[in-house]
Figure 1 (cartoon, rainbow, N blue to C red):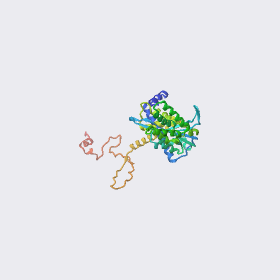
Figure 2: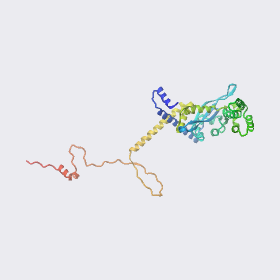
Figure 3: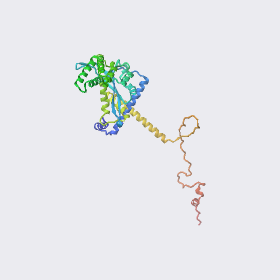
Figure 4: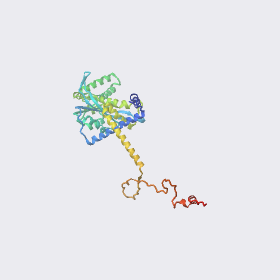
Length: 388
């Protein structure tokens, strides 16, 4: 929820007054700590290659991007990886459907190569490496395919059926007119054919249409897109083998994890704060808050103890005088280690001619300058003894 509302809710439920600025600061600190932990874990996994736990028999990956508003009118793409377990097929509306359950999310505002590396944390945790069968379900973009190659090169590639339907629908709208009944009827028939018969016959018909309408860019572009991904559109085979053919899990992840919190009305984020919010959204939406929050608080307490230790050390060194002898090297001489800083010995007070307090009145020493001054002689010369 928004920071201000969260602070108000804290006061209403816990009777603890928290300002909006403190809510922002503490939330971002917790998210930053979790980002650091997951980054360190990804580095460790890549370096040590530990054995992953056993995953489910059939697992599916899906990845997609969502645009979020940054400061100064800038927009940036947040990438999200969704991992789930494939459930047994169920019959809905007279047709067999395959769904995915036990979903978990990983989101970051980074480039595709960095995203591949960071997602090692989630794929390792879910045991994707040791799953018997894995499929990558997506929109067919190159960075999604590279992500699948990075984690499971043998993963089955499935083009999201709605994305294929958008391409077919765009062709129908171009040929028969936008929102026309002919276009709607033609698109429905071709998508039914694609789902139950595969892409071979459909691509052949689209090729004939291209020959009949040469130079039609929308037809040429969408046909080229579908031809390139023919192997990813074998939907009858995928359904028969118990695989889902729609990447609704990735689209719902964009709405649930990213847009629901970072794309509200009037919201604009600093680029450096996006990942900290995404990290917390990931563990909340993945139902892992109870497991991860103790690790976050432990990290925050450790960081606080380190800061206190550094401040104490800095204060201690500032109070202790140091001796530093400057040395100038002649030209051409190699650098040497700087001199070791050693504390000065305590300064001994100078011996004073003033004796400590005593019951006797104080008198200057025989060689004191006052003895040689006219005032001193007059003051300290014994007065003459009166004679009777």
